[in-house]
Image 1 (spheres, rainbow, N blue to C red):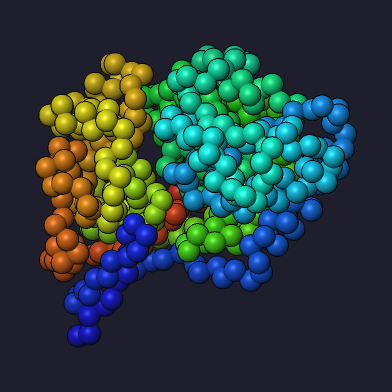
Image 2 (spheres, helix red, strand yellow):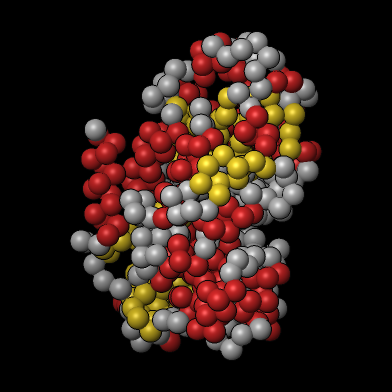
Length: 441
């Protein structure tokens, strides 16, 4: 029997496995979605025909002469091609009469590390944007914030002061499945993007993460999504550009205009790109964290672990290949697990002691670990992996051996969290039909 060759994204490269047991092995990959026109052209077309809004240059013409504009972009942990999107937005803003010094580009970091103004400029296109454009990184713990509303759940919505003081707010982002917000993009630029720490921690609290609708592919009834929508509405986001990427990270579609209309339309396209329908679950699921930049650390790699769990039988094994070249992630993510006896104790500690830094990633990981042993191929030290209650794999041959020795059915999902697996009659399939109806209306 000829071995089956499997390629898995790993860091900025890939690993290859030759598996000699083809009969019980299924590989499901998202569609290729070739780029059929220049990526700038795709974004430009969306901006010229925005949903529910006039083109940006026309919008800006209606602003007061000294109006300040805030442009909120994603941070370096996301694959959003802001270096392409932002110069196009700046071009339209200047065409509409805005001066470059009236624009501030803000990196939406959430609770991630704040980038320097120079790093934000590079994310936004570097020399492609005028030197007079101001840049800053958001810091959820130290940036000046102000309270604009209370969420329906009762927590305060506090947002970066520079965003609130702007006369016009633009956001960018890209839309893909998200393991507890349903989908990335849209409203997430505001919460968690430029929200204060208290607001983020409340929105990502234990009860919300534990909610059955806080899951990939689900928006209606998802408390995390709905809280983020409340925050975006309270800010009054004026214009959004969200892109859709293929598995090579290239732009294949874009949606622009009014935030909620553009987001819903983008979600529908994301389902088309990322959705994979299944009829059964598997005994072993092998996946990745979609390579760089998402597999920089174990903290982010929880997303790939979660995705695999959606199609793994109860008690079945999960194996993830993620380079984790930048380490484990936030120190508290590591400490929460290494200082506890097992997943139930971690979950109990979070519930009783929240808010805690990084608690949602520990919570999702431990929920998976309660039902599935997890194996990790990474550049991390084996001892650290074990302290996270995960079994380390020494290299690609050991991952290959794990696959070949599995007596049950094996599934390989090369694109990890870029994939949205679902089943006939599942809540995700019902949500897909709901979103289709909503966008059509």
